[in-house]
Image (tube, rainbow, N blue to C red; front, side):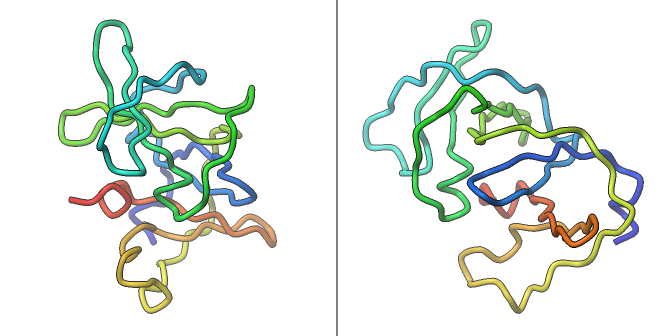
Length: 142
């Protein structure tokens, strides 16, 4: 996947899984804070936060990846991404570090269920560990 070679990524943890987001997709990373619930919202939407006067919807990356909710910890973070000129928060269990990958493979589209098709831009490898590089459009829906 030559298009991703040379890019930098934020590696993060969700449960026991490690995945990554392109740095260029990230607006900022903040500590976990109180999230105001929105009645009748989608299960993946945890609510909204007020970030310096801007109201930002917050979603659970755990839920978007089909994982159950867990309690937030001191390592939980909200990654603020910019999508179509709108800021959205993604709750993750832990932000690990900034990295670049030497080897990135194409995702295997035949392995996805219909509902999860397009969730990964690629699969990076570091030694024996495989890291899914998340594709925000596929993850959040068009």
